[in-house]
Image (cartoon, rainbow, N blue to C red; front, side, top):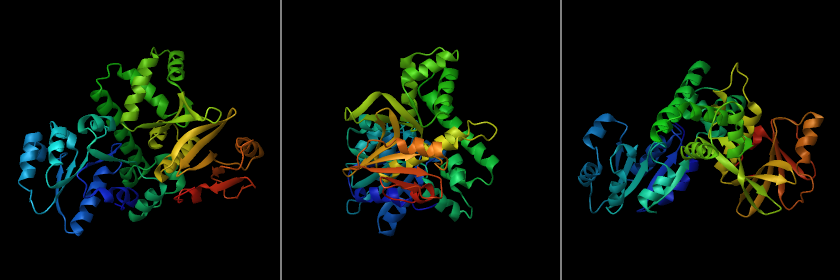
Length: 394
């Protein structure tokens, strides 16, 4: 497995902190691997580590609850030497939150991770009362996927990434059939097993139809009402509050991100409409038939994930009725980013570049396409996709 330095660099300064370090993110995005890499670094520096993986049934049987966990850890404590404690899939321990509140008071540094279906960011706030710092891990961006594929002795083209995304184990599969099968199983685990069971969803068919519609319609603007209207038009009776509730389930499980619309006139975000993006483009692709993959929308989705990886705050920009895909801001700098698969044809060129009309040059205007030719103008920078995917800053 590759070393995910992007995340490790953010966590290192907290190695000695008494705050609980929480690694969060969608299932199978690599949280446990990052815990292992942190442990390796600390052990190489001479630290005493204890790693407990509660996915293992014998360990769960031995340590079923908070009292058993505290008793087990106390046997490994040393007043003179800090213990670095790693608790993987901690949600399998009854009253884990009570144990964590006590553990942070010992001479130890606590790191935890857990399944997104049971250990979500909102619960961190409720259960740990601010005594934590959390780090969200995402599936591989392209540069990580390419590095891991090379490590495996395989080639992973940009076109592969725009279809199959960045779940680490998906890259490990020997062929396309196996990759599809793995991604379908992962989808079923998250949607059917985790969410439907966790929230006791009774109208499972409706939830699955709405989920399928959202995930196959990534990189599009929606409101809860527009989704409700679409479902009603297809003979599915569902209310706006129910759609809002189902969307919240998908967001809490990190299946989707919602990006708000930004109005330059009001200089604020518009609260009713959002552009919905998948955490990984594979959620779209496994819902496509006859290999007719939605590369255009997956491209925009992938670029959103790259911008978030770079640390930008992102919204959709409304330029007097013309939509610009992303308004990206960081460190006081603002960038407007338009995405298109190609602008080689005149109509596409005019449509994409005209989105920047009447915007002054106080912000950097960027268009990202898969074209090999440089289409930069005096006011708009053109980034080739193959270059952008390896950038650290805009």
